[in-house]
Length: 193
Image (tube, rainbow, N blue to C red):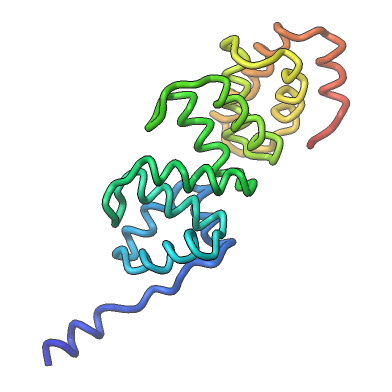
C-alpha cells in the first residue's frame, strides 16, 4: 500500500521542448526549473546536450555542470558546453559567456573576449547583451567602430520595464558623448537590426 501511495505522488516530468527551454533560459529560470522538477531529467538533458548536441540543452547541461545543479560540479566542462552552444549561435550562451568574461565569473576577466561574445549576442537581439556591451564601451573597452551598432540596437530596443528604459537612456547619452554627431544620426536613422 505504501509503495502505491508514493508512486501516485510522484509524477513523471516530460522533457522540455526546445522552445520551452529557450524561454526558461531567457528568463533565467532554467536551473530553478530543473530543481523544481526534482532533477528527474538529468540523463535526458545530458543526452540531448552530449549526443544530439542541441544548443539549448548544451547550455542547460553546461550551466548545471558549472554550478553543480543536480550533478557533481564540473565548471571546466560546463564552460566548454556553454561555449559549444555559443558556437552554434545560441544568444543566451553568447550573453552568459560574455558576462562571465566581463565579471570574471568561473573564468579570468577578459574584456576583449567579453566584447566578442556580447557583440554577437547583441547582434542577435539579446537586450541584456546590448546593455552590457554598451556599458563596456562606455567604460573604454572595445572599438569605437562598434559604437554605432550598439547605439542603434539600444535606440531601437523595446521594453516595458522602466528601470531598463532609464538605463538605456543613460547609456545612449554616454555613447553619444563618445560618437561623432554624424554617426549618431546614422544610428538613429537605420532602424532596428
